[in-house]
Amino acid sequence: MKLKDILELGTYGFNPNCKVEIFCMDNFEERLENEGFDEILIPQNDDAKIYPYAFLVEDSILIAMTEEDDNTNEC
Image (cartoon, rainbow, N blue to C red; front, top):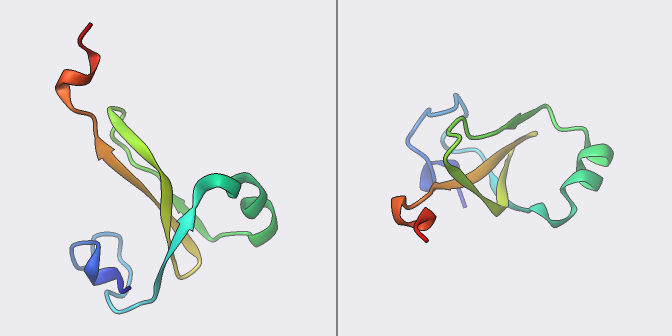
């Protein structure tokens, strides 16, 4: 998988042809301690739902998210 397949070109300043790996968030804390990532890119939208996976781009983690549906808070 290439970065250009998941993001608009240049969204985060990465080379659009760089290698991208799926990163499972299950062991996030352990991997964070052991691997020493250069950067962790977290969604700035407070209404976003964080997926249980992210993308490992070079030495950075791009956290995957989706916007919450407006109907999810109805009783």
